[in-house]
Image 1 (spheres, rainbow, N blue to C red):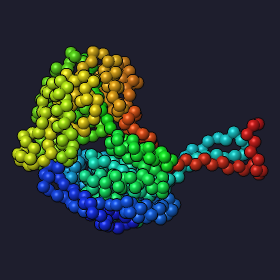
Image 2 (tube, rainbow, N blue to C red; image 1 turned 120 degrees about the vertical axis):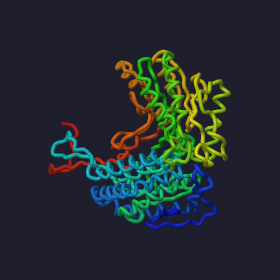
Image 3 (cartoon, rainbow, N blue to C red; image 1 turned 60 degrees about the horizontal axis):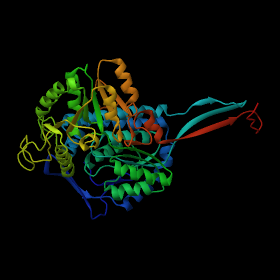
Image 4 (cartoon, one colour; image 1 turned 45 degrees about the horizontal axis):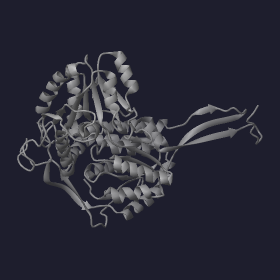
Length: 496
């Protein structure tokens, strides 16, 4: 694995006093890499390289751009386990979860490789005689991509693949917590034949590297995934420059369980949604709103599943859940658990570290581990019900009717995803219609996405266009309308 930043086809070690220290959250004494952080001057150099590479890449036929992405998919498949192991080591999720994420990224690469053959506009009838009208899509130029740590492979892929296939050149800032996975993606693009300057990687703090990308006049669009505080400020700065921006931010996703629900299936879905990836997903299930007559039976199932989770280093085959990504997130998780207790929520299970932080954990390693935690008796006014924790903490509330459940589910600032468990088609359709989210699920977890389907939310969750699918490609293009007059004269008569 390379370290540092990648600018104009070369790996470089920036001249910086600040070091990026990449550590294993399951074993904090395991230092994966240490290297100088990128600076604002490095961003400027990368943007210059991307500008120089843009004309040739823009004029490369779309199908040929797609073939580069297809080769990247094949290389990634050959290196699947290598990518997954590094991801587990630097982010903490289990090897099985990392492998699944790499496979999802490969699906995205395959989908967008095909878009190189399909990217186009529309032919439309003109209201004027002897005139041919149509639209076409053209790349924007240099685009900035800013990705988070929780999906360090899939999110960079679903941002970069459509940007590249559309003919743009890229300046990419990954999270400082997961630079290794980003470096492997960069290596794979290089190996697939991406020309120098088309894809540039800059590893450094958001306050320096991210800020320089957003403020650069040469950057024509910014795609961001991360916190609401950072995303909102970023969107405002981009708006002042008049450039395109899309921000995917927080989520506080609910599962509604009605009286006729299959409780075994509901418990399985909630368990995976709440505790998979240590709850560190924007689509994670963080709230359950259950009918009072089934809540106790549902809680019994959830408690048993949570207490059966084996916690430890995700590289071990016998581990089900890894650590929080770093000490700051570990403290956030524990702080929210303390807040829930102080507000009067009833602790069902969990509520702390598996044994003791810094001592012997479930598998004998030291790491940032938090026990899967469930609270009952949660009300919509509690912080644990309203605020995103981003950890393995589940809040359980109750509601007598679907209308009450929807009112509670919608009473948060976020609007990413939601799910319902019921056999009643009338209730299902009402839920689909009235849920204030960008994505809904029926009788399945709140998590998940597919390459060909738009991904994103509403309210405070999302600003701008959806990601993935055709919408993800369209964001990285501008639409041009063409009028071809073959009448033999230069007049345009709008009224017959």
